[in-house]
Length: 147
Image (cartoon, rainbow, N blue to C red; front, side, top):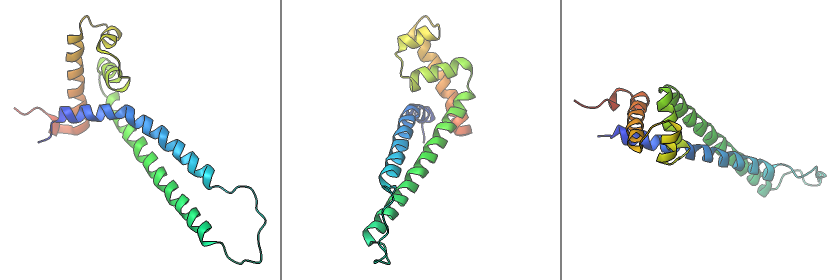
């Protein structure tokens, strides 16, 4: 049986890492394009009515790698958007605690100060409530506590 609270925390923790992954993928895409593009305008050699096999294979490999990176960029953007959409459905104080705790990785004391709570225990209670609500919104009825 899935522990939906833990699964929700794992999803929330991955949010910041996905943002970093997206930046890395975009740099990788730019690198592939820069390294695979033509390097000037070479004079055609009309004595050879063919392209070298190596050049064709290199171009094909670059195209395949570029397509793979483009797919991963799209999947990563969709995952980030889905997590953000669900976070956006939370109450404002729940959104704040989720953002500070899981995305910005602030200390419990910094979070308590930011949300104007007197003790870190209150921050834990608010976090637990926010994560439980996120789990319900993200996973649906399966995340309801069993009775």
